[in-house]
Image 1 (cartoon, one colour):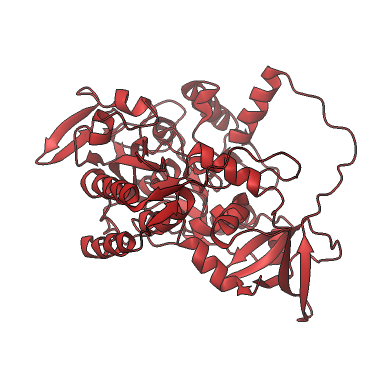
Image 2 (cartoon, rainbow, N blue to C red):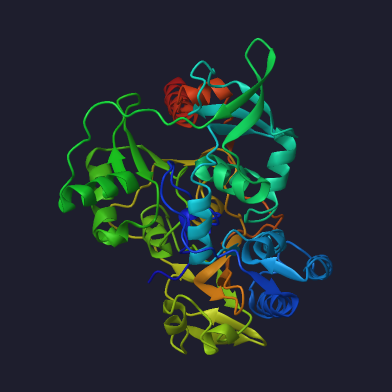
Length: 502
């Protein structure tokens, strides 16, 4: 059952002003209507009541006192009249202050359509790598083909890179106190959307760029799409398209670079949309056993979550004894008021709330009653007992991060990469609703349960920390180096040499 930490990155990312690269289409109906202060304040009070009374972790990372101050400060800033967009920009940092990657505020479909059409001619001509508070050119689609990838962008329209990044991060949802997940979101193709929503767009932009020799040059650049060359590839059949999606989602290989090693890549826990994950896992681990692999590398660097049951089943092939993936899944209310009031956009959430699924488990606490919560036994057949290496990074989120956290707590393994985007302690998730604010029609994405992992250490608001940290230079990123995999191969070879020495 797809109930635990099910919302993947593409849903949680900022969806306010997605655009089409190109020009020409006529603008739709103008949705920049203004709402009165009475309407705006009513929407604000409704939003606040939901977050304070029904969010499972509104004070998990931010104290009640700090949230009260933030609520009051935002309330005072409500103007006599505001558009949906302006009101959303006011509320977005407030929602992000909860520090929950599954809690987000989005524009209505009508306003997103309006913004998308309006921004067609305002495309940023450069794409970026982010390193701290610095921006580097990762993609050049400007009218100046001579720009060198990897050059540092110091300013855009007079605003320093640091100021831009610090501003945009305030609008981004993420678990806990880490910033890497937010930067990964921006790099994943959403920098333009955030920038255009917050700073506004132009047909031409002034950039201050520093090249490899340290020379700084001010340039005015505009988006100039490259003319595609060659013929388009033929359209795939439905079966071939499904297979291509499956290949992207998961795959097993046996790298020639190291002996007796299997590499299992899982970019999302969502392949149950296309096949039985139970049969897939059994087939994978049967093949691993038949190939006598002593080492298993599981690559979760791009895995932003999905079906928690997939993570649980995978774990059953890796553990030696009784284990826990999800320790608890608790909510502050039995059935949220906005579901009773029929204010949810996605009706699946209302069907999910029943006495069969949600049960009272304490005073003022309700638990998600599904098999994946609590203790489990590992499989006997095809269980992997060798050396386990997990590749992780800032895009490892939600169910994937919970999987890594609980696995690390209960099984000897080596984590290679960077801190996960998802929290080590768990996440707010389980069942996700989209609540529509009555007047402005802004959408509040809202999780119902606090999902905790098997980790016993105090929650410090960070992701899972790797045993071996791997960082990239900008040039290594441009060259598409795979340092985590290279480092893991090195660790495996070193372990083999060490065994020979003994």
